[in-house]
Length: 157
Image (cartoon, rainbow, N blue to C red; front, side):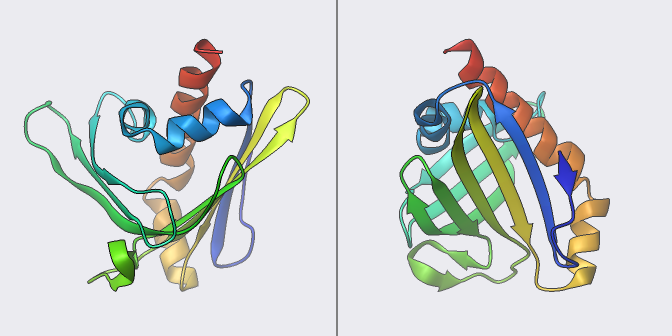
């Protein structure tokens, strides 16, 4: 399910048929994150994944498996085991200001009768940024990676 939470935010939610612990582990294990974080057939390389407030989050992407380009450089603002992850690309690890910031993401995990309710909200500083993110493919991109996450944890369940 997709929605606009406010004029500045975009939301995606989905029930993942796996326990919260498995969804959480797919987020905090660099090897598992690399398997779902970027829409296939592109490849992901996780350079840094320090899931704690102030920890860094750096990923790269590749279309050919050789030339990896920057994907995300960010900082975790909050991390509550098996419940919540908040990160932004407005900061880098250690709370350092980033040269360009675009989004803060809140990922909430909750128990659901069928597994885990996964809710992601992308916060933007302006309506124009939210509209740009939507035009760049928020729904397709984030929807695809959450589907890949679901496939990963549901098949290992």
